Structure formats: structure tokens, C-alpha cells
Amino acid sequence: MSLTTGDRVEITELVSRYNQAIDSGDHETWASTFTADGTFNSKSGQASGTDELSQFAKGFSERMPGARHWVNNLVIDGDGDTAELCCYLNLMRGGEVLSSATYNDTLIKQDGNWKFKSRNVS
Image (tube, rainbow, N blue to C red):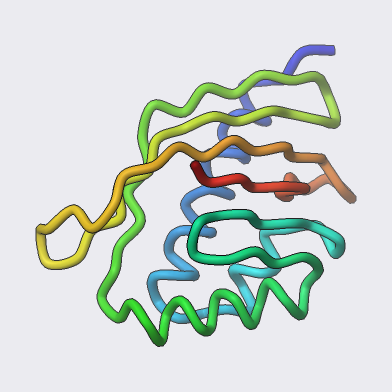
């Protein structure tokens, strides 16, 4: 079964929760956007599992106060329980673009909620 409009809205909201959590220093909420064994890979670091993900987000927020993650051009493909997401990222602070990247993600629907299984930044 292909993704429903509701699935697409939920995935978009997951991306927004992820961004707002790390930008506000809420590392526990950021980690909760991933599955318990979820992975994050970027030039700034790698993390796997809830504890490592939470520590990564805490460290990021401490190093980058005031940073804001802006994403656009979301393309979401998948079926009823799994999805692939590709979108662009601009990391901003005070109107300055600090970096630009692409997210390539695998998501799964777990207990009725979408979560990142893996999030790769390139």
C-alpha cells in the first residue's frame, strides 16, 4: 500500500519536531524521533541508539547555540510501514547559512508513529 496523505503529513511533522528539538536543546525529544536502534551519520559525527543520539544532540546544541535547521524540497516515497525521505538542509544562524546539505533517510512506522531508522547527512 502506498503512503497516505496522513502518512506524508506525519513524516513532515516528524521532521519539524526533529529540527525544533535540536535547535532548542531538547536532546531527549530529538533522540525520540529515532527508533531505539536508529542511526545518525554526518560529517559532524555519528550516533546509534537512544543514548548516543541524545548525547550527540546535547553536544551539538552546546557547540551551536542559536543554530536553526531549515529543510525544504521533501520527497517522500514508501509503502504503509516504511518510507524513504530526501530533503535539503540549510543550517542557519543569525541569517547566515553555516552549511548546506542533503538528508537521505529511512523511516519506519512503529506503534502507529513514524520514526527515523537512519538519517544520513551529505
